Length: 265
Image 1 (cartoon, rainbow, N blue to C red):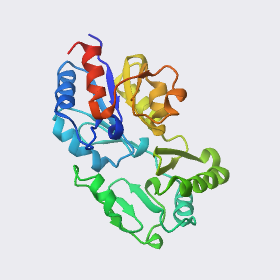
Image 2 (cartoon, one colour; image 1 turned 30 degrees about the vertical axis):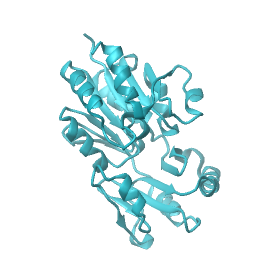
Image 3 (tube, one colour; image 1 turned 30 degrees about the horizontal axis):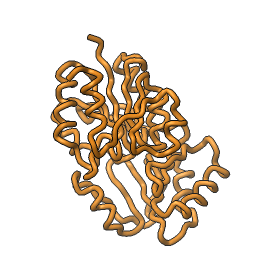
């Protein structure tokens, strides 16, 4: 048997409608790990926000977090990290934006936000991971893996256009949901992190199965030999990854269903 690498996004993909792991999904992944396959989570979430799901599974899992800015091993060892240049981080922090748009920063050990947003805490209820409110002038811009603006799509569109115009390839700009504009250092995405993981494991990309539902999954899916797009995916995603297979809805444990079919579980 050839060991495969199975890598999946979390929200809207591996997690169910309650943003949690379904028992069917847990059972499936445990069987695959027992058979010698490699598993990885790949999410825009913070590393600390993803650990609860790995602990629930109780099997070795690599973690690609913050949209590829960080790669951790199953033992929590940091394998790679790519931060924004400090001057760019400070410029993004200082960018003028509508009062309703929340500024978030992901650093290696913490999630920072510019004002309280209780709805975000409810979204992370299953993990217990929360933010710390910060004052923009307390930071020097160092050690920022991701700048995240959360707000209405029409508010974010203007910010996105301005960032792209000013910085081009120096920054990687994407969306994890329609109201989450995510900005990392140039070249940082789930795909580049996945490439590094494949090389470290000695697994060829043709033996990689990847699952995703949104635009920040594009590069990861494009790299995988077997790419899968959820039924609930962003309408543009399938067109960006032509070789991807459309599978079931995340609320109907579509990833587990595909894996059980693919590996005869």
